[in-house]
Image (tube, one colour):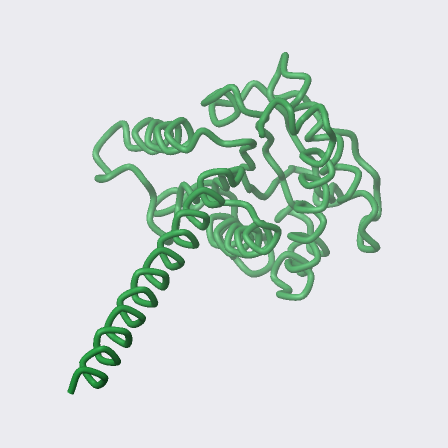
Length: 238
């Protein structure tokens, strides 16, 4: 009986030790995961327009800009998350952010986007849009950056270069300054990516093609990662 009792005590102590060790291990990895999550850089993706504000419309198909913006934002989200970033979307559905369509809905929509951007404390902000011009021959992607912001200019140049290098690009463009509300919502580098002209039949066809949209998302993310990978920018936002 004494020997049996001693073995029971020994196995009981061993089981207790293993339970405690397992618990501590789980807690350690949970804490490590939480720490890693906290250290991830955040990217805000803003799908322009939404709800009653559909933006511009494709001349051939009548496709709403807001729908293309949202589809591209989800592709960008997937790629940034694969690269290890935390992603915040200002708009996740077809609806706008204005609450009701009472007068002033556009202002409320933009204010809500600004609140989301500021609360995210992002490393950068990308606002996704589609362009339109009176001359249907005008086409191609173009990036607008926040005025008086060197980091926004650098980000815009990186993304514009990646877009210009796409095989589908027929005319290389330069990034342009833009004093737009969405670019002034935080101190983070901020750009608007006008992915193409819905007033141009060729651009419209490309923007409605799922495979092309994937290439477009790849190019935008490649440009953004090129910006973030520089040691100077990592010091600023890491």
